[in-house]
Length: 378
Image (cartoon, rainbow, N blue to C red; front, side, top):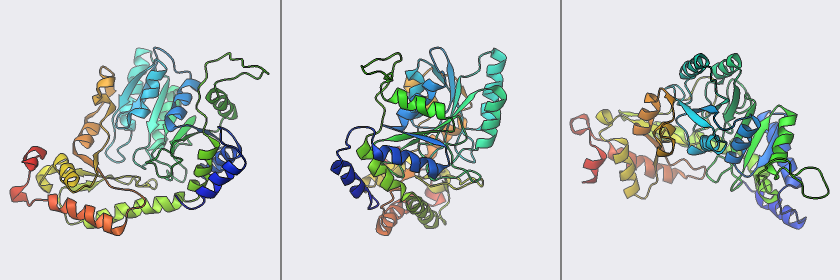
């Protein structure tokens, strides 16, 4: 927490605005819209809820297809299934780890030939790094396909001077407990279309028609953010830039600490903007480093240091078995060799030094390199 959050929450209690909606919600929406440069923002209970509403308002329904980034968390794809549609997964590029525009072009050209274009494209901005948005926008415009940006992990990042999440028809953000700023649980939907913003507010409050009694002509959802959590969000928004600098400092520390080690590479920072380095991610070449990703993860675990593999691609998830994909080799390789190191905003220098020392102990000279995690466990 940054310091202002408690006072804003106490204000919510003092004025008895506890339930969803309220003055903090209204103010949080205005302040967030100004922060990201979007005309309209709608505060919701989660980023997943925001994405679900985005798909619903884009007309996604049973039998439709939605193209989605392959390397991502399941929350990017699950709402597609909520609406009875089927995800089609698009591989990553090496430069950003995000959706490969060349693979998207391949998929859209194939869909046009089959006479079945996707209803939408869900472009994910991964680990604080913006995807290359311009070619994706051009492709979606050319084929007349709605672009939805999942910027849940990229608040505070930049792309050619703009904020990821603001170029598509709808963008979504997450304030889950592990995000760069948090409301404990919460999310935001942004759009330049006032009618869409109003529709999102309507659907997120159980789609209650304007009447003195409870009347519903559409199916709605209980997706609105509470006034208490919006107060936390307002305080967190004030320290967003500080959080970005803290995360970037973590990554810079690791980069310097491992500069002399062969076989360890960091997620690239694309030249078109700034990554927040929400998580510091590395890929391990076992032949050069001396152990594989899983051996390193287990070695860190033995020292009570939590590290996790990068996202397992959606195309490899059992729940999405049978879904089509375009490419997949890059996402599969990043999962096989990628590890997320401890990256919290409150890490001390001693914490970082402890992690770095543990990683360095995993390194083996070339003559003894190539340990697998199975061998390391013996």
